[in-house]
Length: 402
Image (cartoon, rainbow, N blue to C red):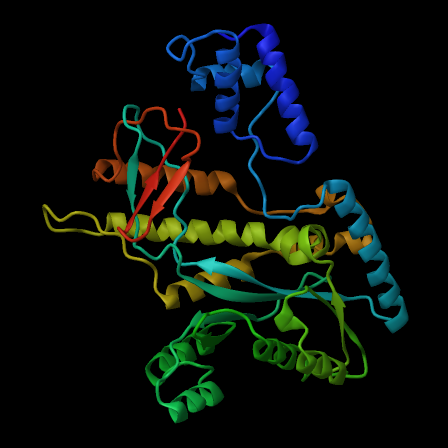
């Protein structure tokens, strides 16, 4: 075992790295421990910095492994300052234009598969294989719009649609079929008639300036009182700020308020503050329910289970249902920093039920194990290989730490 002085040296090393904001993974901890051990004359056979040592080391020194987020590179204090400054800007604009309602619109990616990054299995093997449908990278883009009164509006769903090789057909598809071909357009029309959704298609399935114009036209062009300004929080995506978009917004009397970029969207944009988490939780639950239904479906003896990815129609239905299921309180909570000035941690209200999703996930894992789709044996895994995806083979390789 390492000496107390050796462990204190590691703690000092960790403190120095974290003071600079540098990450310290379990693998880096293992390498540093082996380096210190070598300096103390311990051989690799006598000390391997095992998972048991690492867990004990973290416990003894009141440390823990934390997962990174995608919120940017600014520390919390700077984010709080940015939020306070942004709040002042919004409040001044509300006073200037004599409005008491604020809108926010932003797009988010919704994937066709929500395979968990980890799965429960027995001990003994380093690799556990979990079936997938090979579409874990397939997605649609969803534009959400809500206001500070708790209202959620018609969502836009943008799917991938191959452009016709015939130029005249491509122009026609874009002009009258929202970018879809004749065959797909029939399905899209059915969905739009049945659901509260607007669908568009383009080769990348992503947002662009033309779609920003369509959102402004659909939601604000026909409102009863065009003389009353609309305040819209709008992040710094380039497609939101083209000259045409800014000119059209001015024509509609829509005041575009730029959300501070980078990590600030997580504390200044209602979509990121309180809408996305419960929305994605509901989508994961829908995906797991779909998986359970496939597991329950009858199969001929000897036929192995084959997971089928949800279709575009299914994903669209899930998105609309999940969006409509968000309560007015959740929608309003994203704007509460503007009206209350409270800390972000006190503002967020989520109605997601993690326990329900967990129970569904456990049931799915049990069913997959009975079908022989999960390895029964699992052992210690190298810490630098947490998750390995193999989409080309149509499977997920999930690596778990002991």
